Image: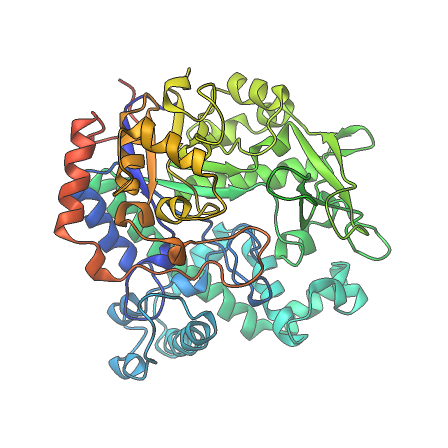
Length: 510
């Protein structure tokens, strides 16, 4: 449970300022200074896993649930460690300070990491620490081989690789590991560097009293090391290696055909018994994220109560059906791995009594979204006066919503909703983003999280993601000059006034 009134900012690491075209783990430490000076207690970000160009580098369709995104590695910190020369950084392209240009950033970071690996090998730097890291990370062998095989087979998805390798047969895997030894070692090195830099960030956050909130998507990408190396965990056709059913959500107010995400579903049971292989994988996943962050938001939490199963042959989500999930038995199985974590349940969308019962039985905080509060009458559950349980997290919006200013000026949003919002805030709407922040901060929800775009009053052009639109997402960046003293002072004042001032340990009980 959450025990103290506090607040924080939602901003993905890729969105932070920095000289290399993308926010990185050095810039993340500077962002901690901004949060601390602004009186904030938490920083929430999106999954930090490696993305794939085929999915627009979405952090929710990662190549691994365990690995870190190489694009977040800081070149400056590599220079400090003696793994790069100044000349390596002098030839960087002229990057946009407002958008992540993923192709250009990827090309630059690949060259930088190749140079760092060469220096690592030739100079014999940090080899003892590297060897320890490799022994401790049980997921690393599969991930490094997966990435190496992707390169060998021209980045085709794993199910299109030679049959024996695609089926993860031991002899074929062993031979591939030998054949691709140097590339496997390179990908292990990249992960070693990522988690060394992450450890620095985690230590800095601890010293400043900033709690880190990470994000676990309930599902993983089909073309991922997780599915390839753990095929018994997923609902796959053993002959074709394709999903028999895929994940999504049913038709609703926002979409007549629902959303067909395409992620493979889990095999929760095998022969009417819990799937030990799957539960073991989930336990490792929770332990891993618990080593990285203090709080975990489980994306699509409702899938543990019941999930929308769509036959893979269907092009939309219309012909799916609800299937009972593992429920409380899952959390009883993993209770030792989550006992030191605060878990936020993303309980949005079609929420049925079984979801609420599961969430409340676990005492997980749910989510309240203010942009959803004004599309109906005074009984709307997202209106602050209807928060019957303070063990909740209130957001003005999430990464999947428009910014609050974008919402307000969106012609598709009914005028009556905007009228209600102005009346509720006793406002003329002139600074609607600050009206929403005030509503969040003044509510009885113990934790208030504000997207950075809403703190800054940015419009729809700064939206992070538009669900079901495959292109143009995840690219927004914040230029350094916007994180101004005026913004820091504003957040300090509002945070203090509404009793959300920063404590030494924001997770400590009253």
